[in-house]
Length: 192
Image 1 (tube, rainbow, N blue to C red):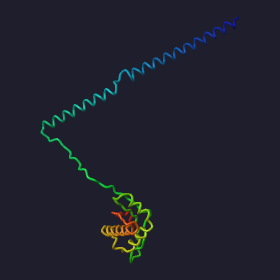
Image 2 (image 1 turned 120 degrees about the horizontal axis):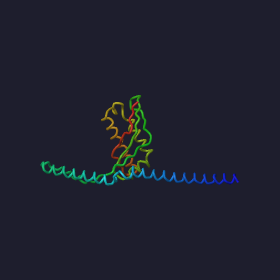
Image 3 (image 1 turned 45 degrees about the vertical axis):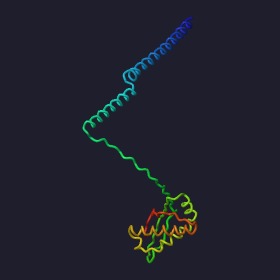
Image 4 (image 1 turned 180 degrees about the vertical axis):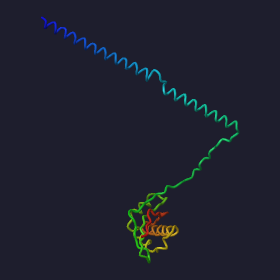
């Protein structure tokens, strides 16, 4: 009989502990929610209201500044319209690799990276790509005609670029009955 009373006390004591832990947990959750609400929601204003207040203040300041300018007689700045002009798109093509040749009458070599440009349509660049082998030969021939003194300085480079443009256009005229290359550009220029 004593054993039955001990088991009943244990059963009631275990049930009471579970209830106390459950109630204690609920109380802690409630206290945590209440403190969180007070800290985060209750005391702080709505951010959208703050933004509206700032915008209204800035607008009022801007209006006051305009009124002050009008009173001072300071002329208001007016921008001009950009004139509409028809502009053509420039298309570029860079020959792969570099062109290397000996300079005429010299032991030095000239190594160039070359690109061409046009404002005609893509057909011109397609023709340049189609006839790349012939154009590479023409470019090397023109380069080999120049001496070391001919390519020194900016003027020499411009003369070489002009000669290359003429030679490329002449070759394209022979092959396709139309040149179309307007500029020759050096992407690299090395004299060794």
